[in-house]
Image 1 (cartoon, rainbow, N blue to C red):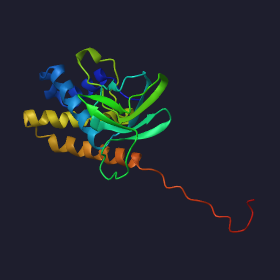
Image 2 (image 1 turned 135 degrees about the vertical axis):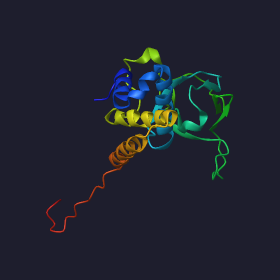
Image 3 (image 1 turned 135 degrees about the horizontal axis):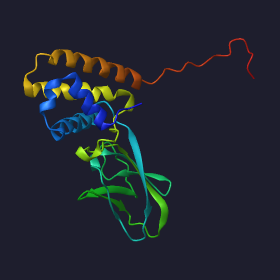
Image 4 (image 1 turned 120 degrees about the horizontal axis):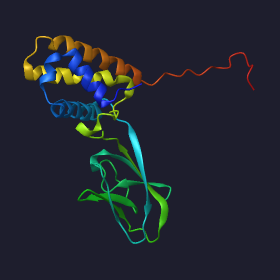
Length: 197
C-alpha cells in the first residue's frame, strides 16, 4: 500500500507548506538521503544476484559496494573472502575485490550457467524528478517515515517551529517499524501427556 514519489512529495507539501517553495529536485535529494540512511542503519534487506560463470574469467563487475556483500556461492559451495577476519583456515577457493570487481580464485576453468550467487545488502534506487510514478524502495508500509523524515530535514533549512512535532511523528513510526521487524518468538509444544507419536 505504499505511496508513489509524487504522493510523497504532495504529502510533504501538504503537511509542511513552506516546502512548496523548494524545487522538487531538492526535496527528492532529501528523500534519497533519508532512504540511504535507513538502508544503512535499520532496514537492511538482503538480496541476491545470480550470474553465469565464464570459463577462464576471474573478474566479475558488481554494481554495488563490495562492503555490502554478505556471502558468495560458487557452483553450489559457499566461498569466503580472502583473509577474512577471524579465518585461520587456509582457503583453496576464495573471492577478493579489485576496482569494484568481485574476483574468484582459482579462476574457473569452465562455463557454469547460473554458477555464482552473490548475496548483498540492497541499496535503494536513487530517485529523480522523472520517477514521480515510482514507489521508493523503502518498506511500503512505512512510506510515511519518508514523509516525516524529509520534513524534519526541510525544517532544518527553514528553522521551522514545528520541527519537534515532525521529529516526534517520525520517531513514533521508526519505533513501530523496528517493532514490526522483530522476529516472532516461537514456542515448542511439549508432549507432556504422550499424545503425539
